[in-house]
Image 1 (cartoon, one colour):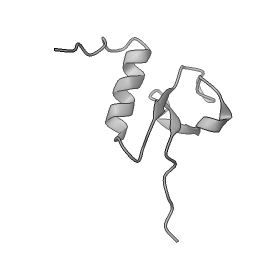
Image 2 (cartoon, one colour):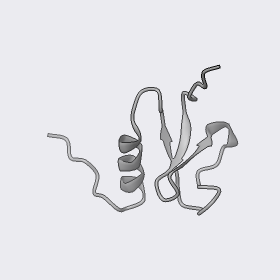
Image 3 (cartoon, one colour):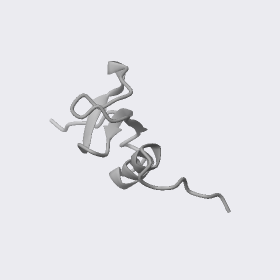
Image 4 (cartoon, one colour):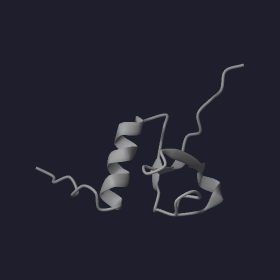
Length: 65
């Protein structure tokens, strides 16, 4: 039987883990850093990691041209 991905998860770029959104936590259960919403059916992990780095101050926000 094929395993399906959830449509929405919370993602921690530090631990590189996914958490169920229904857990209603804004922080990683392992390290406590803020998480971001990731839609694995529509975007790859690179986009989720970029959003996480911006939210946590590791990258400046992307400028709109």
